[in-house]
Image 1 (cartoon, rainbow, N blue to C red):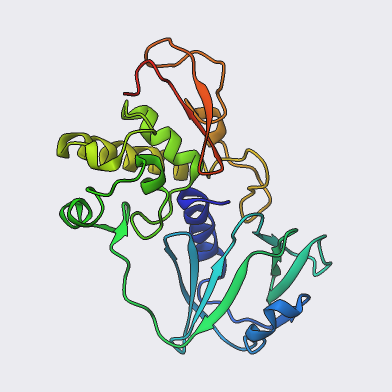
Image 2: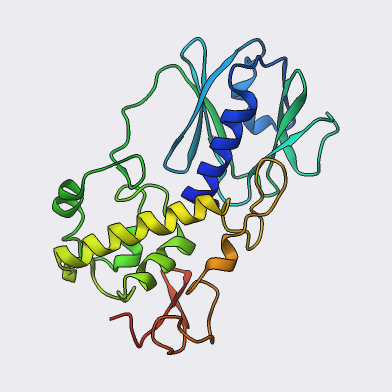
Length: 257
């Protein structure tokens, strides 16, 4: 699933490509998206990210919310020829954006008004004090907490593993056992890792591609995720893979305590 850096990459590319442009056509290939038919003629005024959601804001104030889920991606193409697994197309004067989604999990919907700004996004709005009061005492594994969208927006499995490895904190620890100093280390490292992921246009391990079909480069920066059996870059130990909540977790048991 695309995480915060991947979605931010798309938002920045969309902002540059379609802001100020009029939608000439909207073609639905999948009846599950029938609720977004009336987009023709609208002008894009802005594109923003809200957690893992792409928000396209129109000149009339209405919003188009796109959540890519597991395998969804947006593809810019000058040709209107339909790519395989595409579910929807919007057309501009010089090209088209397709929603390509093999598993059909991505959601697209129109809203009339902008919802309240989220306050749990480490890069756009975050209050450490509120987080520590509401989330820091929870008796759940810290990795599970990092991936909870109600606690922190936009962090998934890949970046949670990387953040905890950089912070030298075991993913098996309960969140309530972390000190304020340790949480501050997590926040600091999370911001650095997420910003690096954006700089590298996301992590392409399986499906992720940017708006132009290009893979990201952050997979070459990973120190924990997908590195099972390799030496830890921090202490020289061995990165292990375990199952946690049905997901693979990668960490170093020697230095993540």
